[in-house]
Amino acid sequence: MADHDRIEGAAKNIGGKIKETVGKVTGDTKLQAEGKADQVEGKVQNTVGGVKDSLRDKA
Image (cartoon, rainbow, N blue to C red; front, side, top):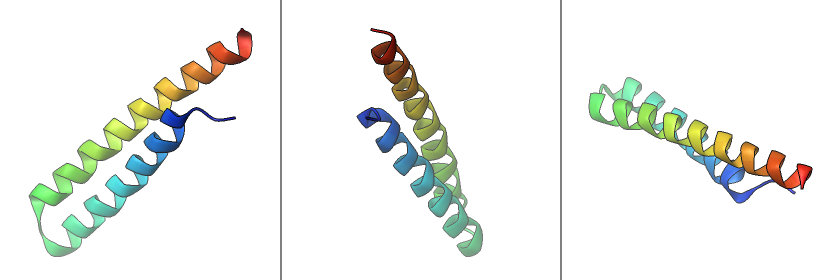
C-alpha cells in the first residue's frame, strides 16, 4: 500500500498546479507563486513517501 505521504504529496502537487493556473489566468502573481511552492512541497513529500515505501518493502 502506498505511503500516506505519497498520496498527500500528489494531492498538493495537483492543487499547486491548479493554483498556478488560476493565478496565471487572473494575473495574480502571489497565487501563481503559491501554486509553484505547493507543487515543490508536494513533489518533496511524494519523494519522501517513495523512500518510505522502498524501505518498508526491503524490510
